[in-house]
Picture 1 (cartoon, rainbow, N blue to C red):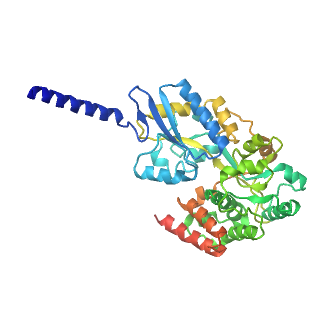
Picture 2: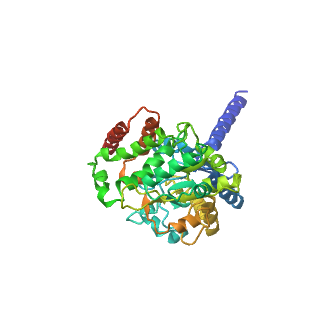
Length: 423
């Protein structure tokens, strides 16, 4: 009897051990299943419905061709950075993740080197400085490129006799014209401030013409060495507050959500907005009559020229410590096939990041119209320490909520800039 009990105890221990092994993960978030299928965890910053739809379609095609690999995609929108910071601190990164402009400075130590992959020879040289370092390491694969500016309702501008403005003063005049001629039925500048990162997007885009591109007002060196006088930043907050006081912004600016943009644009309720990406095709799908244009960021100082703001938009990096690195690279190689790269770029309404894949996007004719306009890098990625994006978002919210004055906003930016630089 004792032998029988001992044998049963031994079998229970073996069974428990085996069950524990079958449940254990084999990489940070990705797992190997008992049937041999590998699950790769993937995090991306994509937030617009059109973008997500295009990416999820590519994932489905890959899984169909590779039934032994499952992609578990996470698209947390505005919560992305906080989630990735936690994962970096725990050194438990997703198998695949979007570096969203920080491939080297923020995520570099976590990324696998992709330089030996076939697609690298077709990487657009315009992205070399962003995705490669001096030693030749390639940090991420670019799903597309960014040419950010301002979106607008092309039909409304034509109806009201407004040309896409090239200066900030011209933009202010255009906004006032829309308010007057629409009798208040159209929001001149619509901001989905309920997703506060969209406020940071505006400040980030406009900081470049304010502080960088004009030769007489260029503060790049001072921003990099820490000697920048932040009173030079106050004009942006003053202009934003002026727009709000003149009722040129949506009244629900602090609660409006990004997901509302396509429907409002389709209803001809928006004149201008800094929302880009798939806004145009999403709105036109809802209303085939609507036409959404895009234009560069207008110049702030007299004599300066407009600028596109850009670089990498969406990328995929592979976690260097992933136990499924081979499978992660296989997915990236799939995405880099010219026909797949083209589909994703067109689905996200942005140019591809590869020389051998050309996309005919919703905004192609507008990019052609402004092909002489230079692309400037995102302001925060070059001139601000990591963490300042969140500061731009929160201070912008506080400005629009009347809890910060423009001068106080600049002071708070200065304090956080110095604190983060010292870390």
